[in-house]
Amino acid sequence: DAGVIQSPRHEVTEMGQEVTLRCKPISGHNSLFWYRQTMMRGLELLIYFNNNVPIDDSGMPEDRFSAKMPNASFSTLKIQPSEPRDSAVYFCASSWTGESTEAFFGQGTRLTVV
Amino acid sequence: QKEVEQNSGPLSVPEGAIASLNCTYSDRGSQSFFWYRQYSGKSPELIMFIYSNGDKEDGRFTAQLNKASQYVSLLIRDSQPSDSATYLCAVGGGADGLTFGKGTHLIIQP
Image (cartoon, rainbow over all chains, first blue to last red; front, side, top):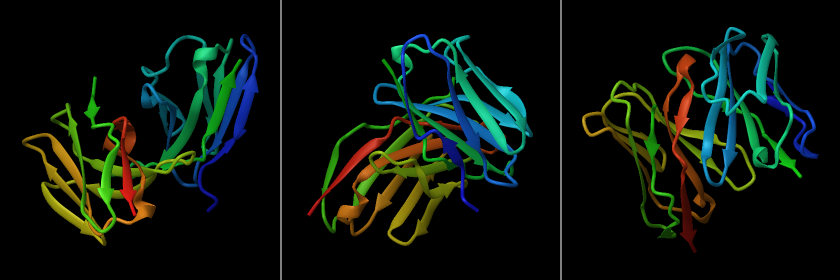
């Protein structure tokens, strides 16, 4: 398996533009997580899905952020409009819901909003 | 709100010595505990997990869990320069996601 695949790896955009980050989880995994990492706040859980259903989006910073998981093999995180404070590395991770299994991370998308 | 606390460091350890990394967590109901390693510019990768009180050993790594004290630690024996990284403590798992600490930056001095 190729692991969790994220795209793009890097994204530079202007303030106010829409940004869409993409994630393909590991085949067979039924939980998917979106994290944001900054120096100041560390690794923060934004939202997670179980069996394609959003379970908890309390970590989403504000309404400008939205996430979808239309099927078991694809998820998106959208920011509209983007702001400079959204600049961070965004990680997608997936796992198999069991007794507590590890989450496997993608390589991340480094987002810079100028 | 679940919280996971770690000393940010940097923690500097001579090569060959034991590195000791510590973590405390707020949710007494937590059942699963993980240690991830993250190299600069890379994604986190799992190195250890522990579910039961006591010690769990895997090669040069030992995870220790004390649920009564809400405390998790990671020991790295015979530290190598390649162990230099940020170590993230995480709590939770399964369908609930992981809550991460901010990580401890470990430097192994040759």
